[in-house]
Image (cartoon, rainbow, N blue to C red; front, side):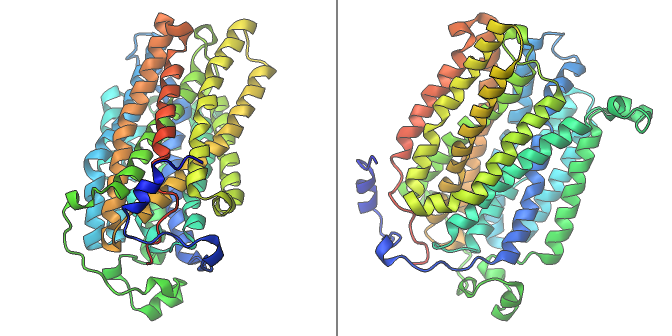
Length: 478
């Protein structure tokens, strides 16, 4: 393991590191009830966000904004994908800081309600600009992910953090399984079930049904949160006896900390900035991959794509999601305990190079054979395997970001900073990836593979940045 820079970072830290294996603490039992509720709420978001992937390219084509140019669909799909993160980047830090003052639950109510309204608007969109407005609305009102990570940090300590943060990639994997199935199966229901959906409404709004199902999940999430979820902000928690009845460990009954406003510039220390920078570049590469995948699936075979229909895209993306979720659930915490979060992160980000290399291989197979055959199926199964390792990077970096908070009363701000950085990266990701894809294909740059070369180079930069992380996750409890 490369530790050339990690010792210098460790020397500048004043917070003790996690004890060595010989003096390792016993694990604190997870507050299963509260974490279970939090994870259930979180599930609605990836289901909604991934449900649009199987049909977004077809929707854009049907709107007529590309003038019939199949290669140009990628430009507009990238814009739609980036708009959510552009709007989120403007407000997510404010939501995180607001949650440090008024509590986590009120901010979650706003975020979940905003996501519900925006997905309904998306399903009722009949113009490109209505799609733009709906995605921007979702981003502006959405601070959910950052606040949920903050709550997870407040519900755990250094001994059980890996178990808890492993759940976030699992939730996104489950959402990545259910969402594409909903989107791919329920899109254009009048074509699949004409007897049930013969009404003119479904002809005008052929993609409303999957959006309506996603909106119902958000309504259910708000109801569950209002009734069962306990506030975790120290200054607004219930008395210790109430927490005990709800299943939160005694570790959570810490003295209340000051919620005085902390200037943002005081938080920008190397121990905070380095994990956030890793998260930002990780998010850029991940969202780019996720934007390229359905684009490659839907692009006609004559342009080097696979020519899949929305239902096939939905099934393959569902397979990617469910296999990753099972792997994370069974092995992530054990692998963290075995080799440590830094090694897990470095190994995971190293998988991006072969992950990108599979794309031109599949394009070459299609061009050489003129059809999608068993060789493509085998390549997609290999891609599925590499995604398992790649997705572990998120759970590992969440641990470093949460542990970097100097005090618990700025944990919301730290996660807000991390989510803002990731959102900014995700603004550029879809547009960059899909535009480079279109340019590579239109102008035959490097045989149509220039886009993959660019992202392989960026992956090398992330591999170096990962070496700058501290060797161990710092112990916030000390």
